[in-house]
Image (cartoon, rainbow, N blue to C red):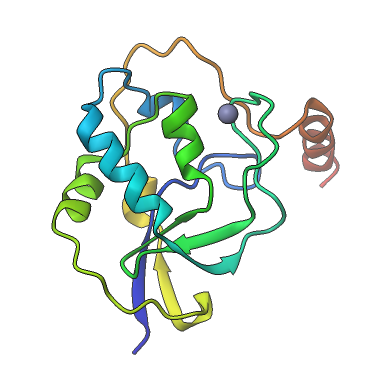
Length: 156
Ligand SMILES: [Zn+2]
């Protein structure tokens, strides 16, 4: 039986419209201690796979160094630069993940994503905390990419 990893922090795009939108997770009042704990934990993740190309910030803030790997702590799998959203866009991660970190005991991390099955269901169901959204996020890294995608949709 393959071990299971729970996905977290994969954001909505034209290719994954079923994922959550980071703007719904904004909380500028997030407890600083918890946030630091989470950032520290994310930084300790080990790379277990390469994502499809380099990731891009859903806020199009101009950050180029968004990583291309999937990281894991042996229980969760997350994008390499998930921390960027916490550090620059007030994104807060679900309490369940914070609790997981507080009780985390290091587990052996297998070196390859294919050794795991990945459960995206929990993450897709996350609603976030932000009910009065004022910021804007994007479904593609550039407008050109969005337009190309829309064209392909209508010709199919
Ligand atoms: Zn950004």
